Image (cartoon, rainbow, N blue to C red; front, side, top):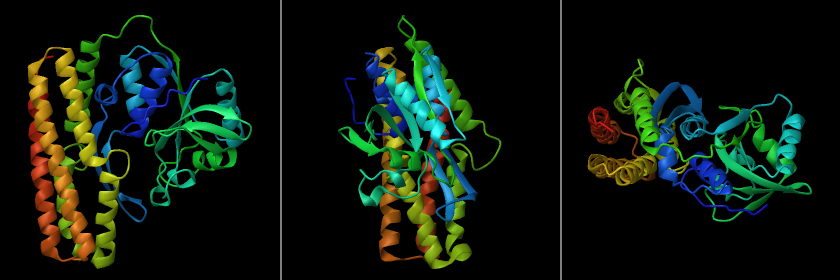
Length: 332
């Protein structure tokens, strides 16, 4: 098989771009991310990740793949397996047919990654191109070249414990339509689903209103958690924002790139103007990350420092609420 590996900004959308390129279809990562309604926000104070509340800036794992491929008219297969051995056999059977396979796994068991990136995060995506003896040829979207991964390491990564459990999940494109996808329809439906997911959730910690919900929680961290755990919670928040995938700010920049590309391809100037606004919001997320990093570096777990960080987050929350409300009214 000819490995057409392309380095990407985010793992799931990067795997999709590589899969499509294997089928000689060239689509940009931002377009896949936008059509797949990838942008999101959720803060779950009752769900602990590495001992502190979990926060995510994109839609749930697998959502971008299933949604974008549906709008492209593709037939896809997604499977999980109770048996690790059966999951590896299924993977080998697909590779023998020259079918590139997407895998959800834990970064902790990927020895080709630098140690700083190998911690217990179970929603990473890679593409497996081929098998050579006991090693697999894999494309990790965050890296520029393909890597080799031993069977034992891949099996461990596919069956890591914790939340979420990968459970041997694999996915692939079974069939693509002969005709070109209706881009305007895909963009329109992708935007509509984004608006529903990000604006309509009945719970306060889901969607754009969850950003202000998190801000209120951050104000309470010093009193509720004490110094050590407060700083740990902030550190995990920034790690999820800036190091996992493209993070909070990066996802906003990718969505801005989607709006710009969609606007250009559809000759829709209003979408392009919204792209500039989303880029500015991404800059605010980056500024928030720098501010929190200084708090952690100085170990200043006092109420004033946390209140200032919460204030910056409220500005972002208010802007995202307003942004998506106005974008939802645009006629595509």
